[in-house]
Image (tube, rainbow, N blue to C red; front, side):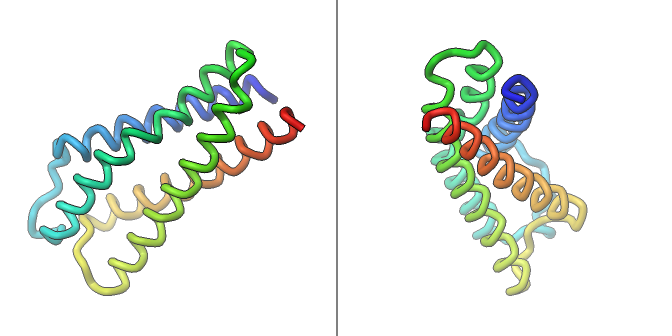
Length: 135
């Protein structure tokens, strides 16, 4: 179970990290007419902040794979950080979309919401698994 969860955490965590790096460096090429300027600015700055924290999920995954003694503690930190960030971003996107703020193309928004849901659920699972290991 630890190895399978470690693989998923490493892959999903790395994908999230790469996505946030792209957002932080503003390399996303969403047409301006599909996204509100304020939303683009908010996402860029939020992504920069998240880069300081979300590296913990792929780190936890890699530590799980090599069965390092620190993996449960890194996983607990990652669970808190990533569940909070994923949930916050999911709710923020739903709120903005409900208010008619342009978030990007329909497919892009659907992909982002799906990824955030996966990320949040994975963080909770990793946290519970780590907590059981520690206790």
